[in-house]
Image (tube, rainbow, N blue to C red; front, side, top):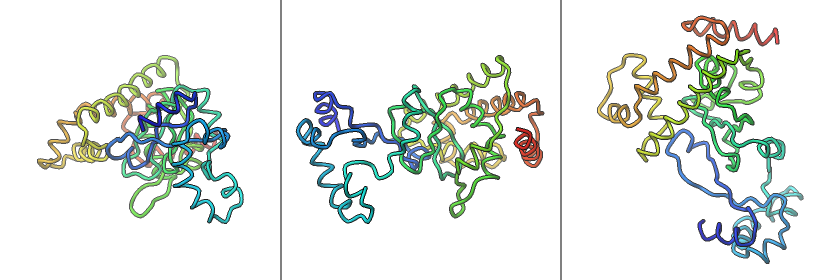
Length: 271
């Protein structure tokens, strides 16, 4: 990847981009790269960066030649579905919010706009940590579980049902500042602990958080994750965020699931 990046930089072409996989959002973060030739002339790629051309020609073209869709065969060097609707949105942002489409725990993280997400990543064109904070709250968590679907036993986030229909709170400036600060602190905390502990996963941290909340005794493995992920701080951040978001709605912080959903449905209908 480093050699290809150097070749592309020398040619003045931005062709390699960080690649975000849904499995890595829930597991161990890994650095992956993807060749993105949208908007590029393939003859220019062949002459200016032949190594990039050869990789795509050898690994992609044979499969595309056998594809039934004529456009896939003709434009074999492009993504089959380049997500043209999200790209103009990201072009005007510094970062965006992402979540794995299928995951045991609904976690939202912030990523650089240069990063491309695969189909199992829901990319949300918002760069405000206040929005990340609201989405990370229990209120949105209950909504997404109730309105989404499941893949086997695992919750699946459907953006048209879970996100598009969700009524965000109408916050005061002071509330926005507070939720924004907590949302950024939450995102920073998880990323920092994973950077310091390469085997630490989001799923592992939230499994332990779930155990702590339920009062379940922690195993030796759980205790290790608790220390690596500073899960006590993770719990505190979520508790403060839940209270702040509930306050922005003007609701008590200790509402049960059914009451949360009843109020959200009513607010959705009102909007």
